[in-house]
Image 1 (tube, rainbow, N blue to C red):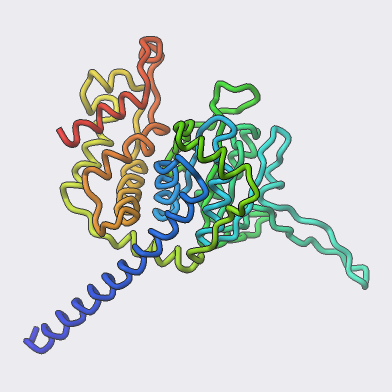
Image 2: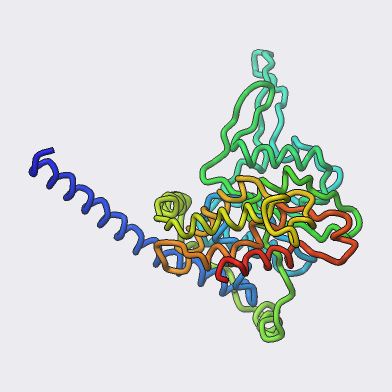
Length: 341
């Protein structure tokens, strides 16, 4: 390579780096405004808001778990508005059929009496779909949704119909202990990038909820982003550099949560552990979390913070461990604590 060619290559690389930096600065500012707009509506759930934004920015789907009345539905509606997405909601019930979500073909007759089938698209053809109380639907209906989440298209009568871009599902789930629910199979749980636990708000946050949501003030957020802008932010997220130490931390964490590979004091309690999809979820979510926090590269702290929402729905305890009172969150926290140890 001549000096002139090398100089041009270096100049091109520098221009590309400058373009990425300019794009990153603009994206960071927009994400900051989006985060603030959501938190102005959803009080006392800062961690939940950040994890939901992380899920979407990483290009994945999220499972919100919590008892009724904790603003899970409101959170998804607010995210749809703030991110400028075409959002729809489906209330899952035991009698909900797959066609109620995906759509179905109807027989039509033209003026000249010719008949043909026309596909009527279901609510899944949205950029942000809220699957409300997903564990109240039958396994057949759950599977139809989760398959579409994975493949980003549906097939009806042999015809393929692509889902919109971007496409994200935020599903809500009541605790399994409640009556009238169907637990999601482990293979389907793995389709969710993060499991986000929604807890009760603190006292000060609940006071704010009482005062600001029961009056006549308009608390409707404004759009901060668009679907195209979100996809640009997602592309930027995937380009963020990840250091070798972070990659090794992800591998150490995930592999140590598998029976036979980690500390027997922990892994002997596990029926099975996370697969490579958990490692992919961790690196994608770590990038997104860093960008939301205003950083252009993830750290080991990001991996430790995301360990629980990434891993806890990808791990199962043995019967003996459950009988001894062991819990998955406790085991994951013990594993994550070793990353900085």
